Length: 159
Image 1 (cartoon, rainbow, N blue to C red):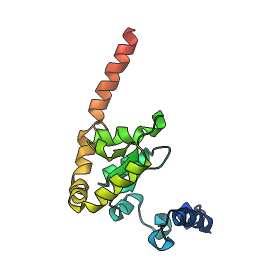
Image 2 (image 1 turned 45 degrees about the vertical axis):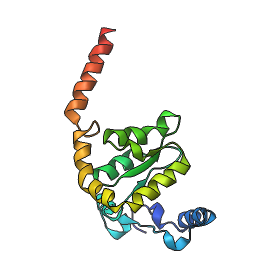
Image 3 (image 1 turned 60 degrees about the vertical axis):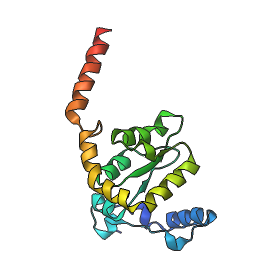
Image 4 (image 1 turned 120 degrees about the horizontal axis):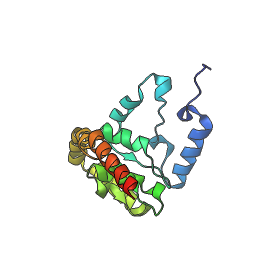
């Protein structure tokens, strides 16, 4: 084995655990694809070219992976929970005008994902528009963020 650590996707125990979890939900192992981009020599962001939709993690929402997906034109389905760390997905989706992709619970999560997966036109449009939405929105507009942050600090200093 090289000096590079083995990825999770290449670990047989991990693959078996995931396949077992999917099997309990009636999804066969033949429908699951594990991809070790590091072993394949494929850059991280290039992997997003293979995705139509990303599913946010539960019960804690992703942050960096959601931003990466949106930047690469891949919509993300998220679930908004009661705690702050369960609302990050909603915040990121709202910043690009995709609040409708944030579910109130796991049942809605699956419905939203299935509906979007069936809508090839919307998926294609999002693929083309999402990077620009990130740039223009709160997530990608660094000058606006800096100005808002500066104003907040000035307000706090006045207190």
